[in-house]
Length: 57
Image 1 (cartoon, rainbow, N blue to C red):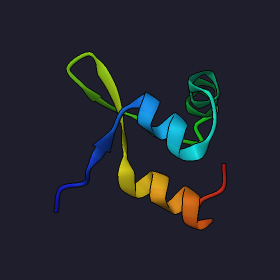
Image 2: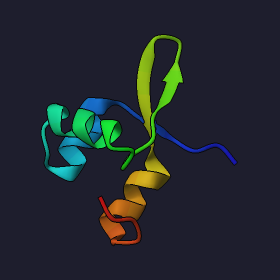
Image 3: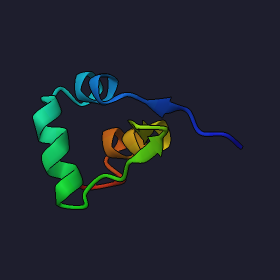
């Protein structure tokens, strides 16, 4: 099954945080990124877990 990928901007809007905050979460290992070419993407399923409270940031 393929997981939908989201851009940093989409994730920031979904979580109501800045893109800089996402950079900090990545640096701390709280979120994982997927590199597609030279672009950073996030798995929608992981962001859904955060929204549902199944994953703590």
